[in-house]
Structures are given as C-alpha cells and as structure tokens.
Image (cartoon, rainbow, N blue to C red; front, side, top):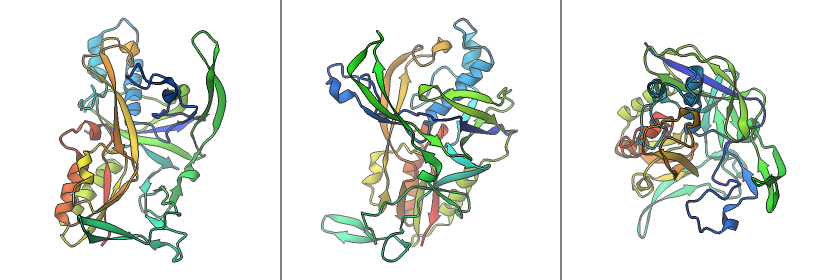
Length: 372
C-alpha cells in the first residue's frame, strides 16, 4: 500500500530562508578571516526552502507529536521514527521518512513547475525562439547561440502541467524589506550593526508544496496547524493530504524514461531542471553537452559523524562536526543535447546514481523535452 502524501505550506506573512550572505561573522571556519569580509549589511533570503529544511521540519514534527523532544526520553524510539542523524550527503533513509519530492509552487490546488522557454520577447522579431547550432572552433567543438540579445533578460517562469498558463517570478513573489540595528549579547549596538534585510512573501493564492513518502503502514499523526520554518521563526499553515497512488514527479519520471527509450541520434533534447541539482563539474566539460543556460545555487548542510543523542537540540548536539558548503546547478537551468547516446550520458550525470542521497530528499529532478 502506498504511503505518499502531498504537504502544503502556505506562508502566513513574510518569510526568510537564509542564504550564504548572512549577517554574522560565523560563516567561515577561518578564525583569522577579516571581520569586514564576513559581515553583510544587505541580506536577502531565498525564494524557496532547501530540501534539508523540509526534511528537518518533518523530523521535528514527527518527534513533537510523539513527545520525543524532551531531554529525557526513549532515544531508540526516536531513532526508529526519524533516523539517527540528519542529512550528511550520504544518508538515504531517515526512520519512517523514505523520500521527498522537490518543493514546488501551488496555485488553486494546481502545481506550477519551472518553465524556461528561452524566448527574447523584445527582439525585433517578436517571440522569436532562440536556437543553437553546433559549430567548429579552432580548439575543438563548440556551440553557437543564435538570436541572443544580452540586453533582454531570459526570465524564470513557472507553468501548469500543460504549459498554457505562465507565471513570472514577480507575479508570485514580493520582496518586502526592513532596516534595523543588531545588538550584541550585552544588549549594546555596534558601530557596524546597521543592516537591511529583504524577506520574501508569496502573493495571494500561492503556496509551497511537496510530496513525502513514508514507509509502508507507518502511523502518521500530522494535522492542520501553524508551524515555524526558516529564519526569524517564519510561520506557515501546514496541510497534509490523504494517501496518493502516484505523484506528479512519478509521472514525470515515467515520461522521461519513455523519451529516452524512443530517442534517436538525430533528435535534439532540452533538459529542464525542476529543482537544484548536485552534479559533478565534469558535466560542463563533456562534449555531449552542447549548450546550457544555468545559474549556481549555494548549498550548505551540517555533517555529523555519530548518532544523534539529544533530540531536543538537533542542530547543536549529537555528533556535529562541521558545516559543509557546496554548489549546485540551480532550478530552471536548461541543458541541450543531441542524440540518444548524449541524452543517456548527460542524464546519468544529473541522476547522480553514485550518490542517491540528494535525489532521495528532492534534489536532482529534471524534465526532458524533444525539440527537434
């Protein structure tokens, strides 16, 4: 019996999901680093929560429902429920939590996924599709992008499943900000304590959502309520669906496999990343990747080397050793390949089967589209 559920998170107001550009002077392991290089006066959050944030939220709620957050409790029961450690880059199961999907936008009950048509709408030829052709260069093979005008931004969009309704970022998110003064632990202000913090806010009718799969027959006690996630104790309305037979991403995986199985060497394919993707840098040196339009997303997680003992303080105790920083290809990136062999090779990088931990918590998802 399936145990997959849709979880919806609707922000109550402003929210803040932290990024690498934080306020403090503790973002480095180099104790001798210049303080001026560590302090950011202009701090802006991320639009989306990290998958590790969603995993941590689920683990916390499972423990809270069972009363296992108290300092003195049955740690064996807690480990059975949520696992013995947090995400460390290699762990693939967390107690009764088996798998997470990418976080996505939901509007009026309908999912919205990244869409990037690569159309320069302000070009002389209105809505002329960008094209690329493989061309020879002196030092090897390369790709040439046609009809590109750097003055016109290739915007991010989100679309329904049929791609008939498009939403741009500024139609989904707003960016309220506040100016303030930080105080030190003695309640005093420092000379360099002024800051401007930019929050995020989902416009009316939009929400975050993701699918969570639990072990078969697991007894779940989730219910509607208000929970805190992210920085500044941002509040979200939490909703939990009845069990689902299949998820949207199950269907996309089936469609991807069907396209790969039927692909020929004369066809060109577009690969769109549905979430951030942890992948080897070798992908950009591979001749099978003809062209890509992508950004980089910073990613940081806490790596532990021993089992958690004090579940009442998951983020500090229980084997914390260091903070790991990495870089991912950001969601909405588009990669172009030609031919079945190239498609198999590049998607193998994206699947990252040598390290399934990232896809297991919702990273490394993509959608394939045949374009010629």
